[in-house]
Image (tube, rainbow, N blue to C red; front, side, top):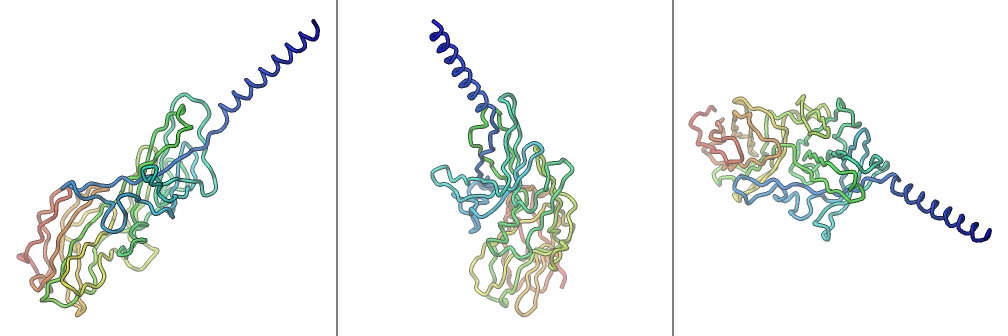
Length: 320
């Protein structure tokens, strides 16, 4: 009988030990497992997205060489963006560069996760008053500079009872995108460059679980290119060229907006009055540079709120 009792007691101890292990496992720290995807911005005519124009592909979005800053509660860390997975809806896995973020304990309630791309522009802490600085490149004619300029933000609320499930962060574009479709007339000299003028390229970035705000637009102190963005380099043919740049939403008040400079130092200047940009939206402008505009300053009109292609008139109200 004593032997039976000893065996029974040993069995109870074994069951208790097993049950204790299960409880510890359920309450063990759970790492945040993420992947990322970009939100394509559809233009007003419904058939264009921000993923095209030669810089992003519609399928992949991220290249797999970028980094983002992740926030959850008071924790933050930089995560590397991996190559898009074609077998997982082209999501790009996110892996910690050094420090890994863990979910809080428990299975009740939810937690908000948010992220900023590029990581270098993000606030270094998750404190509400923390800020970062983002500068868009002067020369955005190359793929790398354009992508590094394209500030994005993502946020998601995750139920704690789903914290073992990998989560997808959808990154949304935060800057205005200008798509310039330009052609040179055969009656003018070759174009040396096309620039966006009077554009503040630096912004203070504040990012919380509830959203991102940009403020304190300024001239960058990090370079000597001032308040300009290079839209296009040399154009010698009469073909149509599509150029895209991004910039923080801001106002132009009868100020120079686009300047075209020829190889013979002739210029065509297009002024703009507009303060109703929608951050994240794409705006399209079609421009023909011929003898009727060279040497003149022309006012752009008819660019209503939204993503409509503005009317670029013949220089009725122009000055040499």
